[in-house]
Length: 272
Image (tube, rainbow, N blue to C red; front, side):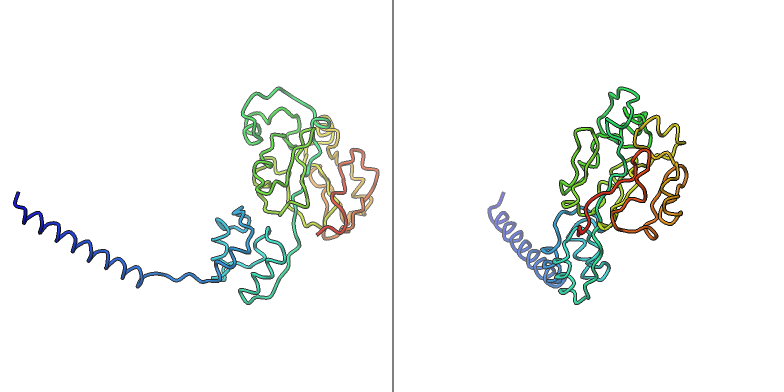
């Protein structure tokens, strides 16, 4: 092969490479989208857990939504009030504070209270057990006890008790709702931190069946409803429920005569 041909080919490729790289460089500058500097500042103030509780894929997406006006600082349930105030200041918004929410496990059906119905040898997750016969415990409404909620929590705010019932650390809980999504029995709910009185049961079976599977099941006796004159507590579909619009937020039980002690005070007054 002629050496001059090789030389010309090298020169040609070099020139083409230079032209293309110059073109790409110019295009990147002309077509580049400048990022709003507020986004970086807001990302630094968000918790960085990327838990998705705000409805966005992560904190970066949340920051972009805040800057574009598609979200409000209060949409992040995890960030503390100080950081939310700083974010509002960056965006030129008024601070709107929302009461902190925490997860509440509405069940007392641990291994002491809930009857065992069978030996479960399947995959050790609540979801798998729920789908395959309901797991080893007898109550079809109660906690299964394999800790899907614990694994889902990105803040180490839930731990399993010695008797197989998840316990929420209300100080660590951010109200992200991941545990709520993970529970196949829907026994975990988010409630404002100021609420302290709860019916820790979800069983809607008839009283005889409910009591036969769990010592602390609500048996729909109606004592709580009568004690409050129906203003705060009602029995609906075999289960006592609290109407928080009518019942006091103070940590006071409606009655101490609940036969199964399923109405319980959770947390301490003054929590924030």
